Length: 426
Image (cartoon, rainbow, N blue to C red):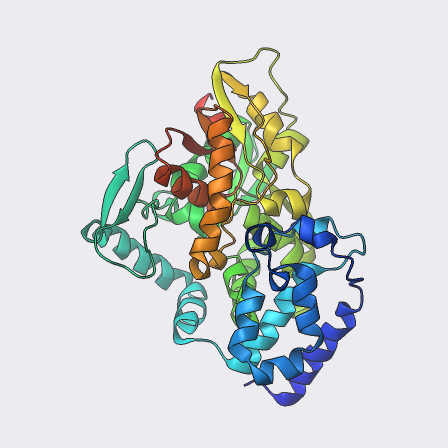
């Protein structure tokens, strides 16, 4: 357990935020988890009622409180539509930090957050080894989507259809870059993020191809750490501090106009979570510069480089799924669609409920896979009903979830990042 005095301070800080909730229940209409379960405890209003008595509840039933708090995708849809402006994500992250401080971390969480993610070199080495031997434990299941399933009974993997670790991660192909500005007279720092680096390196290569095409110089330092969202989402604030500090140390060495990422979650975390939770006062000036410069890759291409739609429509039908972290947290919705319409050969079609969550939610998918699937199956059906050949998005975690759901549905649809489709035509 954390220092009792510190714990009391954390609880007092949380109580000050809870009073902003008017219990109007508007969040019920927005919550994808509540839409499936219909349980008041799953919606924001119910969780805030629980947190109002957190000190008493966490003594009586700490596991029960943890379970209720974790049944949230942190998609931010309720926050984006809250008439009272309740900072829901911040409240839930602080509540999870309190519970982690009170209960302590599990051995698995300690291993992942404190030993692996805070040591990027070790993390890379272990996953590189895993990529070499994963074929022993997995078998291909869908050639079009490139998915595999577990060859043996594996409790963590279950019956998932998943993309395996890349045989050659991005950091192996491109350990670092430091190229001068070209025709654009711009230089960007490139932060691929863990999932792109290790599972979708093709997305990272697509970004680099696009930047080269537009004459943009790239600063990509070696040894980038995780953005920290897995740690802070599970209440491990200390590990989050280490990951952010490691990244700040790397990017402070570069001279760049923007910091871009192809990962909606990484972009949102750097923009919103880093300044709210990173505590080292000596890094605040550098942190503010990074936060001010971070941009989603499609927003950079459309807003800064002025990539614009084609006059003629193509024949390859593509629909788009809005990642929650782009839409709700950053308001990026038009730019990915513009980039698709600027891609030669693409005929863009809108799907029903493009803005609804796919059900991934990071660790939510691991803890509540049945519920995650129920939400994801709806998204897969909307993709199928759109008649599009390909679904594009701007978040590699959403790509994984939609790939799983489409693969299980036996659907012949491709899942691509918007920047991959654009890069294909250059």
